[in-house]
Length: 507
Image 1 (tube, rainbow, N blue to C red):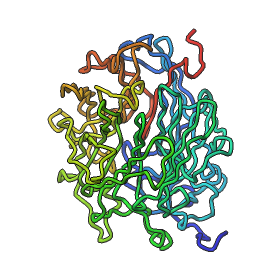
Image 2: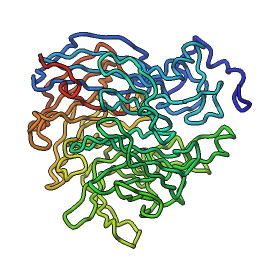
Image 3: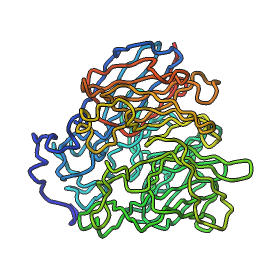
Image 4: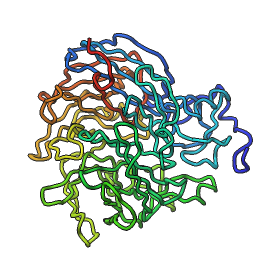
């Protein structure tokens, strides 16, 4: 073992210890740890026959009880769910990603990985620490199980068997790979980047593309103005946008056994704007605004006069309250300080003035996890679907609040028209907790936003999970509800893949 690793696990990591001693592993957050299949799930309503494909989602689902106190709930092993829908029926399959961590911990029969993104707290030395638990993305015949501190793991989209680390045939230029790659619907290119791209605590950012035939191109290296989280990014026809979160990393803190991230209230919000092809330190511009927490991006596009329109979820304070500032300060989530709004920046990329304009707020909700019709990615969009926390809805927060420790209690899905301001909401029920939505076009040639929204929902009255399908033309009720005979832990991200794109027959 390398000298900075522990030599003996504390008692809490030994077999037989209970997850329940940690609040983040209780209630609906209790680990599922299920692998297997369930055919012909129960359906209430009718699944349209035009919905033919697979919904993939990933959840952090620890197979072993951790030995780190207070580690965030999303440091668990990546467990992939696949809902195959065909001819109005739904079949379910779930398998863990066979990461190095997963395999070695199963052999040892105890937790070996330490604190979130801190290798100095591990019991053994890992070549790749990935838990592959943040996003599951389909590209070129493979599923990519992504976590932004490492390369993705490739999986078979039908069997869910792990193929191995995805380095794009040895071409991957960065040590890290984003959890949110972007697929250009016109060119078929996959846009990728990594931050801390030369290792923990480095300010380097690497951007590249992967062509439909698997060739890595357009490699660009940048040095960011801070070693900060860049969880998501955006792509337009001519520009790449990198929003830097005000959570920062310090190597000395890691070596002392501390957290990877710490909130910095003195750091401005930086937005890097770089040419889509051929970017470098000389032609990237770092626009600045007040300290903020940029969340997930909806989309970005260019206007006729060359400006960039960028829609994303934004908060004015640290919503990851488990990573406070250096003095231990973090906002109280119940105070409203963690409110996240759909925000729109309009930026002139040619401007010499690097002060960000005040963003426009697009809707009334405290919201996150925005999604669009992916067919218009990097082009003008009219509709954003998102998770909302709407206190006006009849949610029984008293009953469910203690069961969703460490996660915002989203109780509805919003359908926002960013042109007219029109807003419709789907409310699944008083004891229902909603996860990230995905959009499914009604047909290949349907107009933008015409189709169905699908989302995993936790029903806390039954402690089971459901898959809800809502028609965008009638957003107040479910078209179909698919019932699982178990509860799946809250996940992070997922994507819909049509059967034709998977190469599966619709017969």
